[in-house]
Length: 81
Image 1 (cartoon, rainbow, N blue to C red):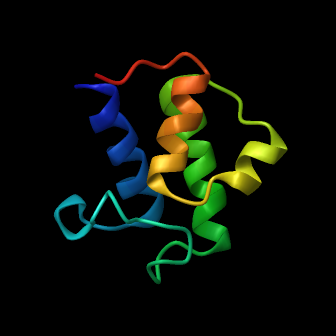
Image 2 (cartoon, one colour):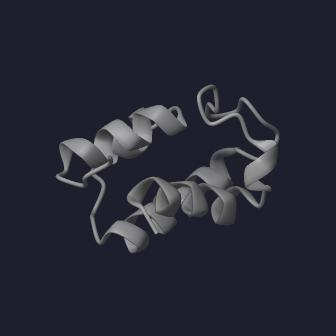
Image 3 (tube, rainbow, N blue to C red):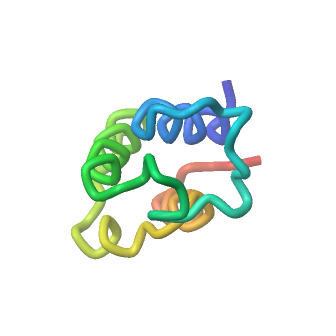
């Protein structure tokens, strides 16, 4: 499983959505009904557990989309092919 797959799985689990129903290029915070503030905190936990990282408060606040989450992980040294 690639890190891309792992990140998508973290979103699917935290947001309780089907991967096939998501447009990953445009997925944004509050862009879908399921991604509210409570789901956002579940997502933070899923990402931290999946990638064994600890997000800073600023990162939690700034994580406004799937793409931003991916960029943050890349900055933390997680490799995406």
